[in-house]
Image 1 (cartoon, rainbow, N blue to C red):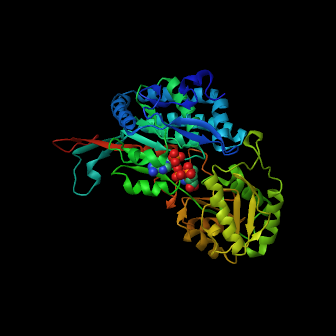
Image 2: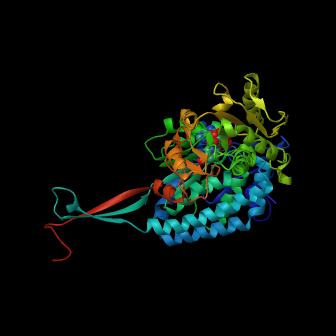
Image 3: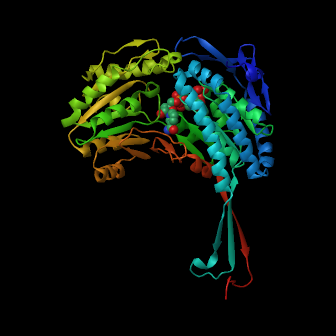
Length: 496
Ligand code: NAP
């Protein structure tokens, strides 16, 4: 159970502690932040509301711990990460339990998230050993006007303190996707977990603690992003910010100093369906892509753009599958569970009502009970409806009927987002042309958008992000190239 057994030291009374200097601590603020269970809408957990002084202390320790961590042999850093991954996987049950209670993620998917996170840590350790163990050797005489008098050696050095801020929907996985590359690359790490998801993150951090990382190298500051966020992101000790979330990322990028930013933000992933597509395959992918975790995924299918000639048939197939989705508690592994908060449910309802007023076709009756919204397919959506452009982050999916492929591509490219998209057709040549024309970080051919596998590059264009994720890209982003140039008095050639 969460907060018991090996995790009992992270909890005091009914409030979870924060992690600083290798210890679990109670904030001097004397205040806590409530985590509301989306299903029951009652307080499930409480976490510390950390103060600015506590942030200062954590940053100071992170700076100093990083100096010796950078000198720790790469293989030893990897060894600790492998150990942490094993502890995390061994303790998947209590961590998954908190995911169920904090963010209403179906129980099975919660376990999958923890296991996937352990695998991601191990993969990161292995990849780090490979790519950080290699540098470059350049010779000066390849550039015009130069003799071979300069030997240039390049290697990758850590940035310093990395600040990691994940969102609620994959709090553990998106935290470790920042933590593991930062650590293997020799950085220290300050984590600010999402409030909904904080307890799962604290359990995960305890697994890192048990693995035996040096004191002060990893810290976890809890509190509301709206209260502590600016202080953290504008802190002078921070050398890199890795953030995943919504529009907050855009404002952080305007306020942050001259440091590398990794921003993975929102999306309005389009699914373009051509006349020759396998409609059964499309329908299954629309269900998986649009309704998994109740549509609360950055890479959820968020708008279907289907050729008019096959639209009726596709909508019927999707409708039949929607009817089979189970709706209810995450503990029972229902397909559709409560969305994360009441404000989120209200926002989704606003989009649905706008579509209703403007004449969209409701394939199911709109139903809501508290934060639980029944899956809804909206057909005949037009560009003047908000749902055609905005990210509902809920189980509501709009279908726009198009009369040409160009119309679909234009709709996709008119969005301020550019995360992923997908195209369904049996004609691979057409698919490639469409993929090239879509202004998104990734295009999936004949499958729904997806972030994984976690070693694939993952990035958004436009308001969907800055930089690229995926194990290798994250390690590279969290390092800087350092060169040493050996200057010779006379040109030197290896042979002859
Ligand atoms: P969010 O509201 O932007 O919150 C993300 C994180 O930012 C949370 O940890 C939040 O903490 C923190 N935060 C809030 N205000 C802050 C501030 N002023 N300074 C620093 N941090 C602050 O996003 P969300 O609702 O958790 O997640 C949903 C969004 O994430 C969607 O738009 C989705 O598309 C996007 N997302 C993108 C990806 C991707 O890889 N592209 C993946 C998953 C999700 P609190 O919880 O304490 O407010």
